[in-house]
Image (cartoon, rainbow, N blue to C red; front, side, top):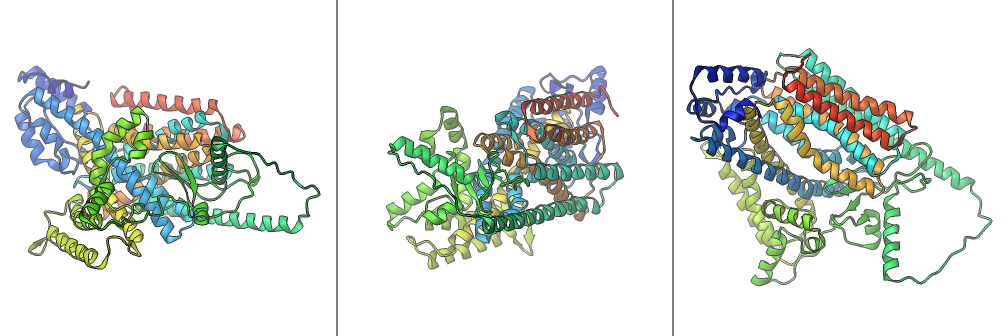
Amino acid sequence: MSIHTFLIFCPLMENATLSTLVNLVTSTLAPDDDDERCVLSFHNYSNDCSYALSHSDACEGGGYLLWTSYVVCQETAVARGFTIFGSVVFLAFLFLMITAAADDFFSTNVSAIIDHLKISQNIAGVTFMAFGNGAPDIFSSLASVISVKQPKAGLAVGELLGGGIFVTTVVVASIVLARPFHVMRRPILRDIVFYLIAVAWTVFVFLYGENEQMLIWEPIGFIVIYVIYAVTVIVGRFVRQRSRRKEKLERRRRSVYPTQIPTIAVMETDEKSEKELSRRRTADTVGSDTGSVFENGKFFCHEETDDEGVSPRSGEEDTTSTDSSLVYVSHDHNVVAVSEVRASVAHIPQLPPPPETEVSWQGLLLDAAKHLSPVDPEEYAEASILMKAFILCKAPIMFVLKCSTPLAESAWSKPIALLHAFTGPIFLVFSFQLAQKQIGPIGIWAYALMVSVIIAAFIYFLTEFDKTPKYYKQFACYAGFVLSVAWIYMVSSEVVDVVNMIGIMSGISHEVLGLTILAWSNSIGDLIADISVARQGFPRMAISAAIGGPCFNLLIGFGFPFLIACAQGKEVIIDLDTVKKVMLIFLALSLVLSLVLLPAQRFNARRPYALVLVGLYVVFLVLVVLAELKVYSF
């Protein structure tokens, strides 16, 4: 516990010795960046309160709730302690809300957009899917830089670099420990090399502009690298798919009729064995090149094969086609290929169920209640005790999200559409903090209300209760996408507010808070989803996401927020201190280790490789703590 935190719970003392000690520790532990400094004395809370209220740009994170002011303006140490405890509980609630908004609404609507635009897997994998997976990290970075006049650059850098180290070590190691496998050479080498290029550009930007204003071409460089990476992936997959199709046609042309007729065994099966056969058929279908996996709100791109033509699930020969559709993995882990659905008219969430046909007040109320219900009765009944507790904790969040955010997979409901017509535009104005701004003599909130009335009138007069509108799914997925983005951005701003307060009150730097609190919370979903996909037999998909995802987050999460900040004329200064140097070194080291160890093991990912990565992360945390305590510096 730092001296700052200790003093919060101590009686106020005014003697010179304590004051000198506080000033000394404050000067030692306070962040070095001028753009992030909030100087509080912690022995005269009345003055600290006035300072925090008058310097909100430095002391707050840009959200609606001013947590630093709430804490330092409390009159007693007990009240300050309870306020800090309440902020930590609220922070956990915010992380849960980001997870729900990103996984249950953002990624689901992104999946519907991909299906509507008929985007091939090659393009979707490095654009929409990558954006859907990295939404929490990207919007946390965006909120750290954009939501305040003085960007919290340390939080963004710590979260992007720290999250990358966590995923490329702990998450990759967890995938290998869950299921050792053979790694596809070309895709993994490509992703590691581009990630190293992104890290090298980050080092160049830090060294070139150390203690100086960031120039606009520096974040543009990240976006240029991403464009080159995306083009490389798309063109490479197109060339390989075309080459494989030519090889298959050539093999068919040279093939001869088999000399032996295969034996067909017929056996009677009971209900249990039929289910097992069905499960195996589904698993075999998903193991092909039919598309991608959508697991726990995360997309997993079906990786291309090496020249030997082995499939992502095992070492067997890949003789399947390269259809560009998606594969959906539901919450209960039932795997369904979209190609199967189109053939058998089976149901998956991308095909909305029909609307209610009973047009009465009772029927409409029951329909609205069903759509707004935050708990799925079937999912809750089949869940474990721990999962049931999680579902109940998430229930209030799901209710609020369903009241404001359309979902393409939901059935048509006219009452819910009318509700969204009013909540959607108003919430957009509120989430981006535009409610107090005006266009001429009229506030923006009034314009939003006018838009709501127009949309509601359109829905009321031109749609029917028991008939789904022709373009309902398309409007729902795009509107849901925009509103889920607004939710994630608003919640991320509140997260930055709380984390910023914790840093000020504890004396911990923004970089350390970013690589711990933000990075861990945003990466837990990746860890769970990657392990789940690996255990289902797709470790190559999981490791591809574990390397390509953080690379995308660094390029876009650093490029776009800082580009916007520079375009707005904000002063962005990044000091290359010891903690940042350690993060850059260990991120590069984790990638170089994978680049060396995997070829040395003939691209067989085994447990020794995983243990080395875990050990590397432990050493990284130890060195970061020592650097934060000023035990060493370089």
